[in-house]
Structures are given as C-alpha cells and as structure tokens.
Amino acid sequence: MKLARFAADDGRECVGRLVGERLAEPLVGELFGQLTFSSARVPVRAFLPPVAPPNIFAIGRNYRAHAAETGSKLPEAPLVFLKATTALLADGQTIVLPDSAPAEVDFEAELAMVVGRRARGVSEAAALDYVLGYTCANDVSARDCQRNDKQWTRAKSFDTFCPLGPWLVTADELDPDRCRIRSRLNGQVMQDANTNAMMFSCRHLLSYLSHQFTLLPGTVILTGTPEGVGMARQPPVFLRPGDRVEVEIDGIGTLSNPVGGATR
Image (cartoon, rainbow, N blue to C red):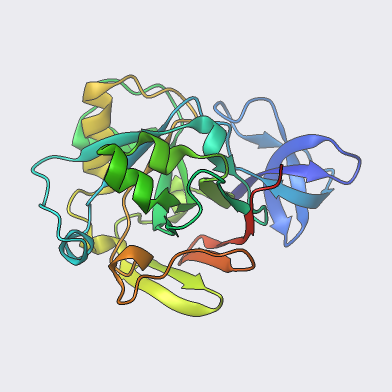
C-alpha cells in the first residue's frame, strides 16, 4: 500500500493510504502502530515528506560504478554520514541553491528506507522486518563544500537538500534489492541503474546501522546513489535555477522537484 503525509484541502496535515491519485483514507491511530484507516476519503492538496524523521542516515559509495566515476576508494564497510533533518523537502517543493555555495550543487537519486519500529542490534536475517516502507530520495550535494570541507555535513545538509517522497510503499510490496532507479534532469536521463548493484544490501545496511546506533521509528536511511551524477560528467553538470530534477524508482513512483535560487 502507499502511505502518504499530506495537506488536505481544509489545511489539515494528515497521514493516510492512497486510494486514488489525489485521494486518501486517513490513518486512525499512530503510523508506527497498527495501521487502521477511516473509510472517509480526503482529497490530497499537496504531499508532505512521508515522515518527520528523528534522524536521516545516508550511505556513501554504495555502488561500485559511482565510486569509480568519482575516483574514490571502495569502502570495506558501509560509509555512514548524517543529513540534517532540516534539509527535508517534499515532492513538488523547490530545491534552493544556497547563497554561500550555489555553483556546484548536484543530484543523487537514492532508494530510502523508513524504520517502522525501534531497532538496536538486529540481525541481517531480521533486519527488513523493521522497515515500514520505502520511498524515493535525492541526496542533493554541494560538491565544492564537500571537497573543501573534507567532510560532508555542510555539503549534504543545506535547507531543501533532502527531497523525499512522494509517499511510502509498504515493505510487503517491494523487494528493495531489485528496483530500477533513475534520475532525470529537465527530462534527460542522467542515472539509470538497479539497486541489485549496491555493495551493501538494504538488509545489511539496517542491521549494520542498528549495531552502531539506536534506530527510532521514522528514521530515514538513504542507501547510496548509482553512477551518472553531475560532478562526474565531462563537462560537469550542476543544478541551475529553472531546472527540474526527478527521481523515479520502479514500484514506488516519481519524486519531482524544481530548482531555484536563494531568496532573501
């Protein structure tokens, strides 16, 4: 099923299961409990990020071809970093090129997992039992900051640098390790790969992270990007005001965001 956070026509913020392109049955109770829904249908005015996460973990260099195109060494274990929760952005909202670093902002199509219940020290065999669902993500990155800072926090965490959505597809309906994933910039395909090329599977990633941290319900895990990013192209291709970037994952849908400059 598709689960969405959305703004209703009357301004309410709701969570529900989609029963039409812009129609949902609201959740009764908690998202991270027993999923029960009202039969009263509510129009969806705009999608919100599918969850409000307590943490956003991300994985670097999880596709060999992406590591190769950037001239990076392959990691021996998952390469983990954090994105600020204030970077979260909904489908349709604008990626803003920051005043302090507008020149080399790049796109990264990624599959994201959302943790459904508290996970600590879980085995690989049980790991996917802790997943509520999957969604599309764009790990937007300021490459000059990434290069100059020698670490990734600022580069990956500017406001609007974590588009997520447009909804969750529940874990029972998707095999996360066999999903075609694509990004498009102004309609042109830039990345086209399959999650079966990941070095570390979703099952491995969740288990690994749960042995380092307590994963709370709603935690988002970005699983890495495949080859085709803008910085690796000749000449490089970076985001500019007026662009539109899309992330499409088979079995989930398409996350689409325009790009704009900062407004004071």
